[in-house]
Image 1 (spheres, rainbow, N blue to C red):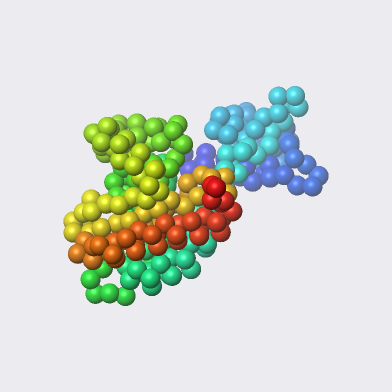
Image 2: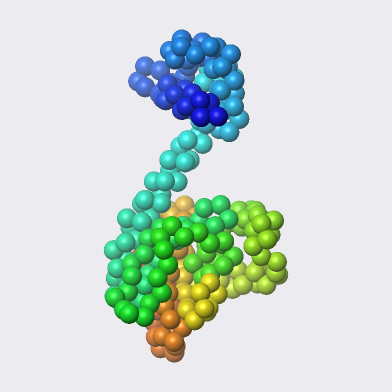
Length: 250
């Protein structure tokens, strides 16, 4: 298997476009890499099946596929979100005196990709890189609630098949409320005795790409302070979204 992967990577590298050439025939790739033509055909066909390579039906030649660009853009978008979010997360932490998290969706899970910890003895601290199903916790539910219908229900089907959730009607009702309010709030859902407030971050395409959330001990989430945390979290999410080119609907 490792040899196949190695050959596939070598092949993809070999057909990177340049000023003189954008497409290659299997014969040209075979000669360039000194790999048998049958092997090149087999590898190109497999890569084309997953969109890593595109075959021009008229010329019968191959070029890199859009799947590679999508993967690259996904990484770029996550880095862009993080770079735009960090200074705003710092401000939000100082205003609320609570830990602030940045979460991005990947498949049917949400991943914490960064955190600004509150300088308190009693605080909520979640590890960066932690994965949680998109049906659990404010920072994940707010992502799911703001996805387009097709993507949302594909993820819900995946979660059901994995046994991550069983009350679909309850989740659907909750997601509708979250979408309408533009905020998700959970108490003790993923960690007992804690609260979490989360708001969605949108790209210039009006696509939800991340969430920003504030979390802390439940005892500090009361009355005026709770309202303040909710309003500041929403404001921070909008500020990050605007940094990414998003325009607030009028």
